[in-house]
Length: 142
Image (cartoon, rainbow, N blue to C red; front, side):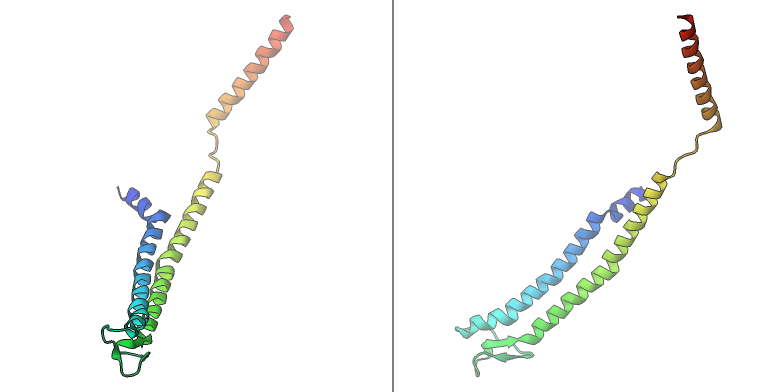
Protein backbone atom coordinates (compact mmCIF):
# COMPACT_ATOMS: atom_id res chain seq x y z
CA UNK A 1 0.00 0.00 0.00
CA UNK A 2 2.75 2.47 0.93
CA UNK A 3 4.85 1.44 -2.07
CA UNK A 4 1.97 2.29 -4.40
CA UNK A 5 1.52 5.64 -2.65
CA UNK A 6 5.25 6.34 -2.94
CA UNK A 7 5.20 5.51 -6.65
CA UNK A 8 2.19 7.79 -7.11
CA UNK A 9 3.88 10.70 -5.34
CA UNK A 10 7.24 10.21 -7.07
CA UNK A 11 5.61 10.09 -10.48
CA UNK A 12 6.65 13.24 -12.36
CA UNK A 13 3.09 14.18 -13.33
CA UNK A 14 1.98 14.73 -9.73
CA UNK A 15 4.89 17.03 -8.95
CA UNK A 16 4.41 18.93 -12.19
CA UNK A 17 0.71 19.36 -11.46
CA UNK A 18 1.34 20.62 -7.93
CA UNK A 19 3.99 22.99 -9.25
CA UNK A 20 1.60 24.29 -11.89
CA UNK A 21 -1.08 24.97 -9.27
CA UNK A 22 1.31 26.93 -7.05
CA UNK A 23 2.81 28.90 -9.94
CA UNK A 24 -0.69 29.49 -11.33
CA UNK A 25 -1.82 30.93 -8.00
CA UNK A 26 1.17 33.28 -7.85
CA UNK A 27 0.66 34.29 -11.48
CA UNK A 28 -3.01 34.97 -10.78
CA UNK A 29 -1.97 37.33 -8.00
CA UNK A 30 0.44 39.09 -10.38
CA UNK A 31 -2.19 39.48 -13.08
CA UNK A 32 -4.75 40.67 -10.52
CA UNK A 33 -2.34 43.26 -9.22
CA UNK A 34 -1.54 44.54 -12.71
CA UNK A 35 -5.24 44.74 -13.48
CA UNK A 36 -6.21 46.43 -10.22
CA UNK A 37 -3.27 48.79 -9.96
CA UNK A 38 -2.41 49.68 -13.57
CA UNK A 39 -5.43 49.12 -15.76
CA UNK A 40 -8.11 50.18 -13.27
CA UNK A 41 -6.59 53.66 -12.81
CA UNK A 42 -6.33 54.09 -16.59
CA UNK A 43 -10.01 53.23 -16.91
CA UNK A 44 -10.81 55.48 -13.95
CA UNK A 45 -9.04 58.35 -15.75
CA UNK A 46 -11.82 58.20 -18.33
CA UNK A 47 -14.33 58.72 -15.53
CA UNK A 48 -15.35 57.34 -12.10
CA UNK A 49 -13.76 54.54 -10.05
CA UNK A 50 -12.46 53.75 -6.56
CA UNK A 51 -9.58 55.31 -4.61
CA UNK A 52 -6.13 53.74 -4.27
CA UNK A 53 -3.05 54.70 -2.24
CA UNK A 54 0.57 53.49 -2.29
CA UNK A 55 3.81 54.00 -4.22
CA UNK A 56 2.86 55.39 -7.60
CA UNK A 57 1.50 58.44 -9.35
CA UNK A 58 -1.77 59.99 -10.44
CA UNK A 59 -2.58 60.24 -14.12
CA UNK A 60 -4.80 63.27 -13.48
CA UNK A 61 -3.63 65.45 -10.57
CA UNK A 62 -6.44 66.09 -8.13
CA UNK A 63 -8.33 62.93 -9.15
CA UNK A 64 -7.49 60.15 -6.64
CA UNK A 65 -9.23 57.60 -8.88
CA UNK A 66 -6.41 57.79 -11.45
CA UNK A 67 -3.68 56.64 -9.04
CA UNK A 68 -1.31 54.06 -10.62
CA UNK A 69 -0.06 51.90 -7.70
CA UNK A 70 3.38 50.71 -8.80
CA UNK A 71 4.21 49.45 -5.31
CA UNK A 72 1.46 46.84 -5.38
CA UNK A 73 2.52 45.62 -8.83
CA UNK A 74 6.17 45.42 -7.75
CA UNK A 75 5.15 43.52 -4.61
CA UNK A 76 3.12 41.02 -6.63
CA UNK A 77 6.02 40.51 -9.08
CA UNK A 78 8.50 39.90 -6.26
CA UNK A 79 6.04 37.53 -4.57
CA UNK A 80 5.67 35.60 -7.83
CA UNK A 81 9.45 35.30 -8.31
CA UNK A 82 10.02 34.23 -4.71
CA UNK A 83 7.21 31.66 -4.93
CA UNK A 84 8.57 30.30 -8.22
CA UNK A 85 12.10 30.05 -6.77
CA UNK A 86 10.89 28.26 -3.63
CA UNK A 87 8.84 25.80 -5.66
CA UNK A 88 11.70 25.14 -8.09
CA UNK A 89 14.49 24.77 -5.53
CA UNK A 90 12.32 23.16 -2.86
CA UNK A 91 10.23 20.76 -4.95
CA UNK A 92 11.17 20.49 -8.63
CA UNK A 93 14.96 20.26 -8.32
CA UNK A 94 14.93 17.65 -5.50
CA UNK A 95 12.29 15.59 -7.35
CA UNK A 96 14.36 15.67 -10.53
CA UNK A 97 17.39 14.41 -8.57
CA UNK A 98 15.35 11.68 -6.87
CA UNK A 99 13.92 10.56 -10.23
CA UNK A 100 17.41 10.57 -11.81
CA UNK A 101 18.76 8.39 -8.97
CA UNK A 102 15.77 6.04 -9.28
CA UNK A 103 16.29 5.72 -13.05
CA UNK A 104 20.02 5.08 -12.54
CA UNK A 105 19.26 2.42 -9.91
CA UNK A 106 16.71 0.75 -12.18
CA UNK A 107 19.10 0.80 -15.13
CA UNK A 108 21.89 -0.67 -13.00
CA UNK A 109 19.62 -3.42 -11.70
CA UNK A 110 18.52 -4.30 -15.23
CA UNK A 111 22.11 -4.28 -16.51
CA UNK A 112 23.29 -6.87 -13.97
CA UNK A 113 22.86 -10.38 -15.31
CA UNK A 114 21.81 -13.06 -12.91
CA UNK A 115 24.42 -15.83 -12.65
CA UNK A 116 23.29 -19.16 -14.05
CA UNK A 117 22.99 -21.82 -11.33
CA UNK A 118 25.54 -24.63 -11.59
CA UNK A 119 22.95 -27.36 -12.04
CA UNK A 120 21.30 -25.46 -14.91
CA UNK A 121 24.66 -24.95 -16.61
CA UNK A 122 25.48 -28.67 -16.27
CA UNK A 123 22.09 -29.71 -17.62
CA UNK A 124 22.52 -27.36 -20.58
CA UNK A 125 25.94 -28.84 -21.36
CA UNK A 126 24.54 -32.37 -21.10
CA UNK A 127 21.68 -31.49 -23.46
CA UNK A 128 24.08 -30.04 -26.01
CA UNK A 129 26.37 -33.09 -25.81
CA UNK A 130 23.42 -35.46 -26.23
CA UNK A 131 22.21 -33.47 -29.24
CA UNK A 132 25.70 -33.70 -30.81
CA UNK A 133 25.86 -37.44 -30.14
CA UNK A 134 22.39 -37.99 -31.59
CA UNK A 135 23.18 -35.99 -34.71
CA UNK A 136 26.53 -37.71 -35.26
CA UNK A 137 25.07 -41.21 -34.73
CA UNK A 138 22.25 -40.38 -37.17
CA UNK A 139 24.79 -39.42 -39.84
CA UNK A 140 26.79 -42.60 -39.30
CA UNK A 141 23.73 -44.82 -39.93
CA UNK A 142 23.04 -43.31 -43.34
